[in-house]
Image 1 (tube, rainbow, N blue to C red):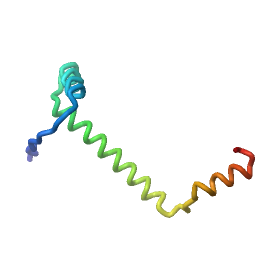
Image 2: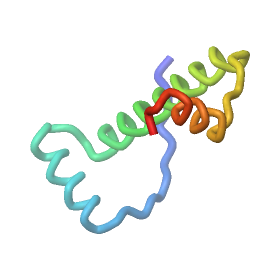
Image 3: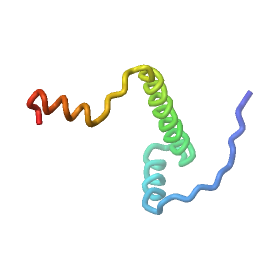
Length: 77
């Protein structure tokens, strides 16, 4: 079954709008296609970040102060 598109009104910075129009023309793609792709990539990146946070959830927490003390002890700072 084909998925219906949803219409949305967005407001773009004029320079971004111009760049998007130029890229759409240069790539023979619609502005909507480019915007959808950018949103998908952004959401995929967010999903990767959340997965990384979840993987590291049980790691011990080290304070910034402790890191500084350790660096000082080892003559790094």
